[in-house]
Length: 267
Ligand SMILES: [Zn+2]
Image 1 (cartoon, rainbow, N blue to C red):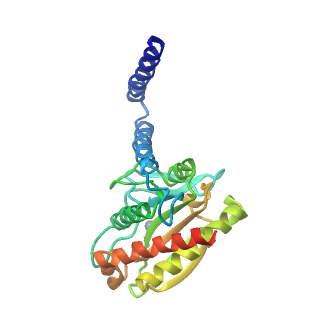
Image 2: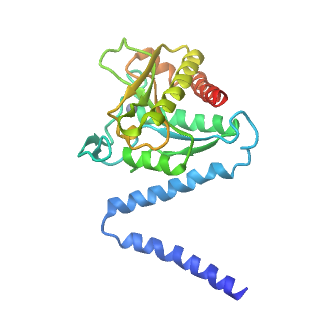
Image 3: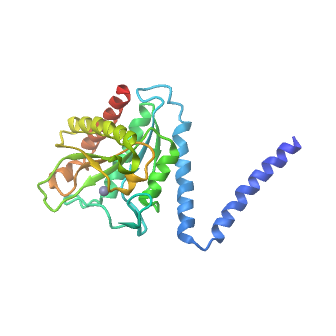
C-alpha cells in the first residue's frame, strides 16, 4: 500500500512540476502550442470514452475532423517534408461570405461540430483538430496531430471563394501520391468520391468533382488518408446564404455522414 501511495505521489509531483517548466520557458510561441496540443489531446481522448462504438453503422470507425482556418498566429512552413518554408498562413487566410459576411473559419467550425455529433450518433469515435474559434496549430501540426490519433482518415473542412460570384458548387480534394505514396493517395481518392457524391445528392449543390493536389501542406505531411471538402462558394450570394441556414446545414452534415457510411460499407 505504502509503495503504491509513494508511486501515486511521484506521479502527482511530476504533473505539478511539468507545467512549471513550461512556464519558465522563454519560447512563448512554442509553449502555447504545447498547451494547445494538451487541451486538444484531452478533446481527442473524449470520444474513445463514449460507449457507443459497439452500436451503429460507424461502430469501430475513428475519424478526424479538421475545421479549416482559425489560426491566430502568422507563420510560414514548407509545402512538404524536406522543403524550405514558403507557405504563409495566418489569421487573415480563408474566404468570407459575400451575403452573410461570415468568415470561412466560422462556417467550417459550425459544420465540424454538427458533423462530430452526427458521426458519434452513428457509433464513430471522432477526433477534433479545432473545437474553438482560434488555434495556434499550423497546417503541418494539424496533420501531425491527425497522424498521432491513428484514425482511419482525416476530413478537412473548408469553403471556396473566387472573384467571380457566379461560380458555385462543391469539390473534394485528395493528395497526389508525390509525398504520401500511392496507397494513401488511392485510399483518400476513394473516400473523396463517396463523400462528394453523397454530399451533392443530399444538398443539391453542383458537383464539381474530385481534384488531386500535391501542393497542400496539410496533405503532404499526412500519414493517414486525408480529404478536404470545399463545402461550396461563399463568394456566391445564394450559396453563401444557404450554407448558413439551419435546415441546409443539416442536409450538408447528413450528406457527408452518409458518404462516410457508404465508404465503410464498401470496405
Ligand atoms: Zn479554406
